[in-house]
Length: 509
Ligand code: FAD
Ligand code: DLZ
Ligand code: SF4
Image (cartoon, rainbow, N blue to C red):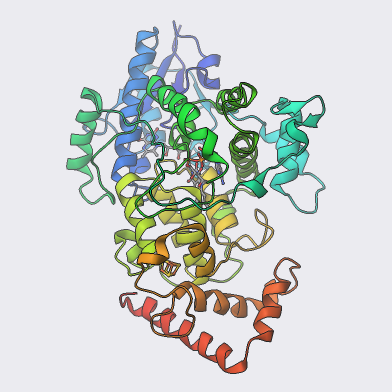
């Protein structure tokens, strides 16, 4: 019998993938390919490239060991073509195939490309998520606004996670009030598991070094797991060592501390090396056994069961046009220091430098430092989106875009967030120790040495007064502005204008 092709993409490295379940290993042929189009649709971080290619190669080996035939296109093989669809066409002809089975791609970009292919492709749902696209749409239907908190409660009920009968464990759905402690310098902190590159990863490191010399970010030290066994060991270490403090320090930042109590597992989850429900069950077991407190476990489960599923649902619901949203009409170019970390703003320098070194920053750095600065400074959200999509090892549009366009830049006009996550330096000072060593003065607003976040924060509110003033959650801030003395208001806006000019001319700031 002639074979069908089974497409497995670089973020579909899961043995139970719907396309593999639907195929017959004695007849069908798995197609995997390292292609320049996927490697270059944004300027991916060098570590991200190594991570994906190495994990793809190991997954192909595993499939072969399990009896699958795999046609694997390596990037350094001259016969490998430019794109996923071209690779499918090449293999289709070469093997005289009679059909293609694919699991739906995470991104609209590739969904469209596959839909436009002339090959007969059967697309199956990606059921590695905890709610189907249809069920999310049904939940969303008829609601005036979509709020993660209500979605999350529904998901707790559906999965039974942290439930006592029909009530939430401990009596509350959400323990975020307890999760806003600042971390103190000098406290002993856990660290994510570091994996030594093996022969396959070393070979990929060499290939990426040669073929992508201009990829942003540092290639080495490369320490990510690149197979499911390694990712599982990293998850077990997180549950043992970091989960108990996850809640307390969820919003904290510390100079020189890149991971705090975060799991650093999103990159493994997003390519299918880890399973979201298994992680939630493992975290719940830590609570039930008394090893981790409820505020930590609830906070962790909420990120996966709530936020991760919610943003995926929004991305699917909103369609391919979502990434072009620019409700606040922001148009400045992304400052060069996002690619170098070369700025006197200590918090931004720390977040960008660690991003370039690790292809990782934790949530509060992404949201309240780099994201907050870009929104306050009126940077074009599409440029911001492309930066986030490029520099993080866990970045795929389905999860990145709702977080960037929606949550962080408020460019979708409030689909994801109920108000902009805009904050002055005071917030960063409360949650971190960055300001102590910063050239800027976090308490000042108008002077040359004043923290740029302060004047830009007020300027942002004033610029968008018409669209934001009616938001009840913003009313207090507008009242504070009105109460401020006229000369201070003028000086604040003048300082903001001078900062924005510096951004435009590329002067150091
Ligand atoms: P933890 O802090 O340990 O959280 C646990 C898990 O919850 C994560 O592993 C992740 O799978 C999930 N999670 C937490 N917050 C979110 C969220 N807001 N949306 C979806 N899942 C979440 N996450 C990505 O996976 N890819 C991205 O490209 C991405 N881009 C982001 C851009 C911005 C501007 C912001 C504000 C957030 C972004 N996030 C993204 C969400 C979040 O910052 C990362 O999931 C998290 O920092 C990953 O690190 P961790 O595994 O240590 O997470
Ligand atoms: C991110 C990525 C990269 C860098 N390279 C490849 C690749 O060469 N081949 C492949 O199949 N997948 C790659 N990926 C992951 C895809 O970009 C991802 O599957 C789509 O963006 C859909 O989420
Ligand atoms: Fe960041 Fe302002 Fe603090 Fe400097 S003073 S670290 S720029 S918040």
